[in-house]
Amino acid sequence: MAGRTALPTVAAIKRAVADEFGVTVTDLEGSSVLRIHSRPRHAAMLLAYRLTNHSKARISAFFRKSPNLAGAVIAREERAGDRKIHEALRRATLSLVRR
Image 1 (cartoon, helix red, strand yellow):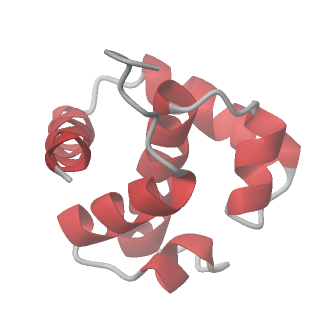
Image 2 (spheres, helix red, strand yellow; image 1 turned 180 degrees about the vertical axis):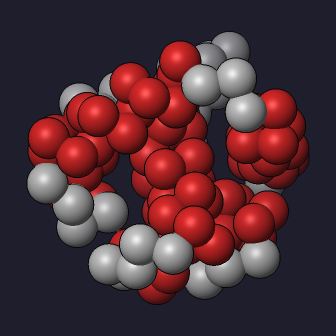
């Protein structure tokens, strides 16, 4: 459709967030509970929820996580006032737009 911007893919979101946080896409999909991996993973889940038409359950599948976890993560990140996370999400979103 003319004039419509295509939605980013979850894969593109993962790459942008991984680049922004200095981790790998594998880290985002992994099971590590270390904050260095879990915070970028949570940010990527939230960004995927905001920028795609996927449900929380579908997003959880992209990250190999349970649907309950994805729902809780997205709800918590939306409420959180963590400026570092939100600034990183803003930069990751801008990098997606430029691609």
